[in-house]
Length: 131
Image 1 (cartoon, rainbow, N blue to C red):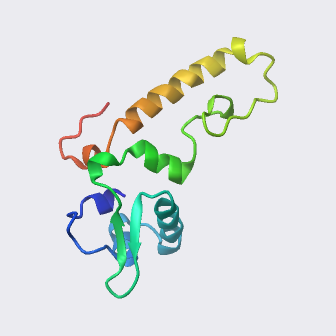
Image 2 (spheres, rainbow, N blue to C red; image 1 turned 90 degrees about the horizontal axis):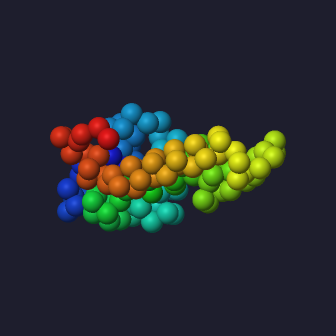
């Protein structure tokens, strides 16, 4: 996505071969990622000799949080604090009293705040400041 973010919006679609070479990602692995990103509505794909991929929205409207959720899944480090894939811990006696769960909720919330608040445009800016 960062590689595609550098392409001008009016540019021709970028081929998978070019993305794989530019991002230094194996083509077979990239195929799976691009398919997931396309299905999530973050990319448009074009068939044919001049086909390839293009971002579906301007870079300032795509957050790193969206991308990571598509590729990696929930942002939560433990399932008991996930908003999209909640699962109770087997050994937990009381979620309300679990200090680890409370800490992980803060980690989840801060991670989401940073990643959802950082767009592809922000991430590709040369003067990006560390959070």
